Amino acid sequence: MQAHLGDQLVIESPATGAVRRDGEIIGLHHEDGTPPYDVRWSETGEVTLVFPGPDAHVRHLAHEPGGRQAPSRPGVDEASAISAAPPPDGTASPGDIGRRVVAERTRQGLSREEIADRAGMAREYLAYLEERPADPSLATLIRLADALGTTVASLRGVGIEAPPGQGQALLHPRLQALSPDECRVRLSTHGVGRVAVSTPDGPAIIPVNYEVVDDAVVFRTAPGSAPAAAVGTNVAFEVDHIDEAMSQGWSVLVVGPARVVSEPGAMRRLADRAHTEPWAGGERGMWICIRPTRLTGRRIGPADQ
Image (cartoon, rainbow, N blue to C red; front, top):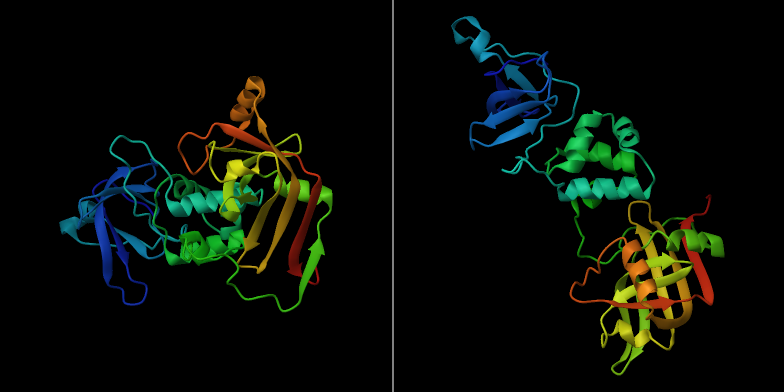
């Protein structure tokens, strides 16, 4: 596909051939006129960066005798057009789908290039999708989900409010104990875990953002909060991961005494090494450390693994 400034980009329905969207190409990113293009859409006046897919073609309105419309061959280098306008100040931030793609491939230790090659899409397109609030087509999402070993629903965040584990159980599951080293590997990824404590109102299980420092679990909270009740007692701390698409997952349980980290130098080091601020927000400068006396875990997966 090649275009000139002033040409029209047309996106048609694959089933009916009806025009779904059209706009003027007002910006080229390559001297030879190949995608992507900056397009001003006729129905909104919005300008977006577009990677034309197989349902798009160019009308060379400004370069045909008498204004004759002569569409070029549909592009076959990408699955969809992006519908996402850059912010007025020129900055950009990823959309929800892009964040989920980055999070999943990072969790699996895969590069952007590996996922793009698996999905059969341009690396530039995947970079745009991860870095900008794009709106990819269903075909693109299916290919991405397949490359990541997840589902389109997961990438879209469908059911994010529902508790995990509603998927179909494996036909022949295998429940396997994890070794202490395997538990440490899974625990050390940091993130959100749950601490079980006794409070004046009874037992409570509270999610907290945690870190692992020198084999100890540490988290921040506020004095007088429910997690602060852990101090001076033996507590249980649990992390897990559920892969809904594959109906498998794992959990790790830490049991040990909890204490307050009060040394100023140690508190500064913990704050410097923290990967994120507590999601609960507010003033949460009280660091609690759980030193494991018991570390166990289990993994559920197919019997043949």
